[in-house]
Amino acid sequence: ADADYEFKYVILGGRVAAGYAAREFFKQGVKRGELAIISKEAVAPYERVTLSKEYLLPNQPSRLPDFHVCVGSGEERQLPEWYTDKGIELILSTEIIQVDLASKALVSASCQIFKYQTLIIATGSTPVRLTDFGVQGVDAKNIFYLREIDDADKLVEAVKAKKKRKAVIIGGGYIGLEVSAALRINNLDVTMVYLEPWCGPRLFTAGIATFYEAYYANKGIKIIKGTVAAGFTIDSDGDVKEVTLKGGRVLEANIVFVDVEARPLTSLFKGQVEEEKGGIKTDAFFQTSVPNVYAVGDVSTFPLKLYNEMRRVEHVDHARKSAEQAVKAIKASEEGKTIEEYDYLPYIFSRSFDLSWKFYGSNAGKRLLVRDNDPASGKQKFETFWIEKGKIIGAFLMNGTPQENDAIAKFARVQPGVDNLDVLKEELGLPSKEE
Ligand code: FAD
Image 1: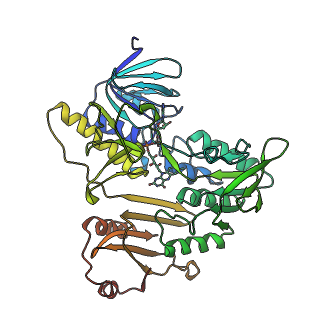
Image 2: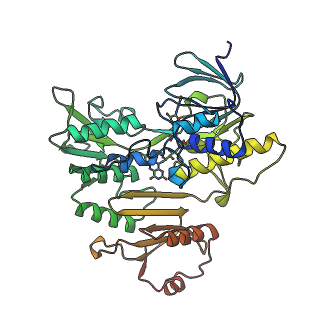
Image 3: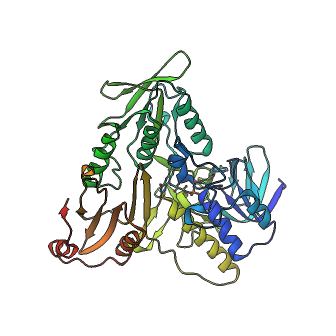
């Protein structure tokens, strides 16, 4: 079939990675009409992390155009005009439903055909729906997930409209924690439900989780652990009325928020490109197994040089940096040049209430909790170090200053040697305990 549109570069996906890739293309030099972003969403790329945080607050919530990329990294905000100005095509509200990497063609839901010379896949990830776990009553109204800005709008609408105001949050990861906090600030009655023995199980130690759970309890958030949602009951309007937990307990609920797991959006490319660990496999330049096809952000599984392993990372810092790396690599290869391999230091952050933490590196090995993790002490500041094979390899800091955050990032990158934990404890000169 003939192409309706043809571009030198196409970015498929329109959020974090796409926005940062566009900026890098602009920095490196791109001619008018050479680059297009194709996105299912109706708005120009924005910082997704806002959706579970400032977007949900009752007072002065964040709204577009406030958080278009690249405000998250302190750079110029790219409004829709920014793209027009640079001659970058923003093809919005356009879902691609078919991809043929061999003939370099993308087909949209309205049957338009887009051709490209170089493709950057930035389709990201999407929350797994409870439907996939065979839960009863999942079609009830007022069961929410956070994928796009539309989802956040629907949640905000429900929060504003509900009179009974009972919310159940399913999932104890950092997104569940953020949304719980935001709904509590909206004065809802909030209960969190999760299967694991403590919140943030993929990263948090018992010491970090103990702090969080006590802090949340003080804010009036109830926590039920060790169980999952087995089903929902629905009232005559089709709205959710109750959540039945495995084990039989029933919770009243007018709003349910679910964040249990995310899945990378790779299905369009199945069988056409190599995959690994659930993502699209790339090299250190985010080139996939198919020439001139790159994959960045949540969807890519890339060599994490620091730990000498292949990894997929679902965090915004990597979405930004991988996008920049891919564009630099594309531009360099056109000039017959090479660039350095991606050398990523994993970095995650989250914020809720007046808590803000950062984590750098790897959470393997022994753990040392430094300072005071009792929220009742009023300090709300502590760190945790992970120590493996005689080196500090990971560091978490609650409510650090920018300078302190830089310092822990450096620890995780440089991996200072620790012959003996007792010596380290003494050198730190702060209260600390092994976990
Ligand atoms: P995405 O942001 O998922 O973007 C994918 C884009 O592709 C979307 O625009 C989508 O519409 C589009 N798309 C997909 N398929 C198609 C198709 N077939 N046709 C057209 N368009 C398509 N990370 C942190 O480190 N800290 C945080 O505090 C944090 N908070 C978060 C809060 C929430 C609610 C969520 C969901 C994530 C959060 N993250 C956080 C993770 C971070 O937002 C992601 O890692 C990041 O958004 C990944 O960027 P991406 O561009 O790879 O993918």
